[in-house]
Length: 343
Ligand code: ADP
Image (cartoon, rainbow, N blue to C red):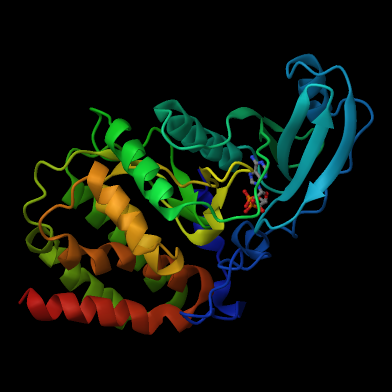
């Protein structure tokens, strides 16, 4: 859990990313981890000849007898990524010299949960551990050969729907572990009803963070009025089923493998209302064939359109927290529009 780092944020130095200028893999500034965790940016891990836990795991438990090549994989936002080629195939390894294993443990838990649904391709996580003599950590997972195409949107929609349909729990809304959204802490305590969970642990938490970081009392006050109206705005969802959500589904986290099959990466999983999965749709490029295929598996619920901006609001608030006031007007506009209809 990353919550301990929250109070030491100094994000005002970050340049805002205005809405609409978000580019693939650049939604989050690469040096964000340094700010969030008050550490210097991650340096590539120097592979230690002896006592290297990554080599040790690959050779002792990963079934390999030889590592033939290690090459770096670009495109990440926070960590250093490498492909380890061996005589039994490749492993994908992310390391971060400055962050302990909690972040990768949460990533592994999310990947594992999605992998277990057997619905959409996600890399199987193998091992998370600490890097000796540093504050850092690593994750080893299945290497997936990423293809050049984006894959079929319809297939992505169908498989995501299958994941939502299959990935259920009787524990309520939440997850068995806290995680991060971008690099913002995301709390997932099991909660019996969706409105309470979304109010307290999603919108409410982000609003509090905005107040603490930016002293934005106006937005906070408006947000509190919105939270009071939430039972009204989300009425009819009393019997909503908790679904396993990827939680951060934007274009940078969706790829296709070499056969063109969809792959989703880098999750911020929790069990929530299925529609909350589309909170990042403004950054995801889903086309009509995606939605058609999704709704064939997970039929559209009455009031879907009235809730979409509310679910986007969580991510806009998070972007305000991550990247600054360039996202403030988007947050305000959404809050104002809901306050206008819920008087
Ligand atoms: P970060 O945690 O730094 O954001 P990512 O999870 O985005 O890193 O991964 C960095 C790069 O590695 C991305 O370009 C992504 O497409 C690629 N990648 C991620 N997971 C795998 C995998 N299991 N196999 C192969 N490539 C992967």
